[in-house]
Image (cartoon, rainbow, N blue to C red; front, side):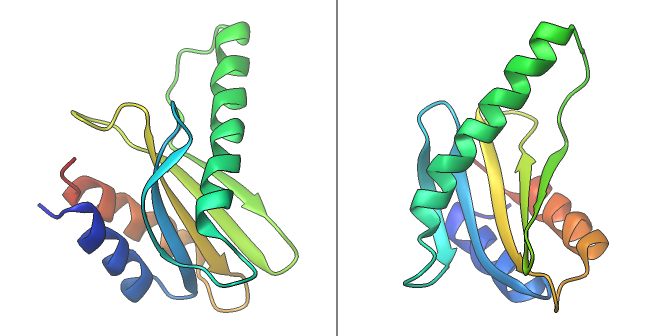
Length: 124
């Protein structure tokens, strides 16, 4: 339903506490689109670094013989949440949505719910 730029803008505008969002190809580590961030927080660098997190988890699951799919990965910092949502469905293989949230303003359950909805509307 929406393109990458529109989906990322919607994530930033509609998710309380969101400070940055990106669509990332974890096979290459490239951000296909970003919005938000700051001079001290480069979303492109963060997106590339989080591809290592996704790859490591997928590799670990393979070694353990786990057959389930990753829905999302949550990294909690002292003042931020970093939410990684692997995309499913046609065209979504190898991609994830990356969301940075201000921990003081964010509702994590609602952010997960809204990111899932944004994912379902996104056309790749």
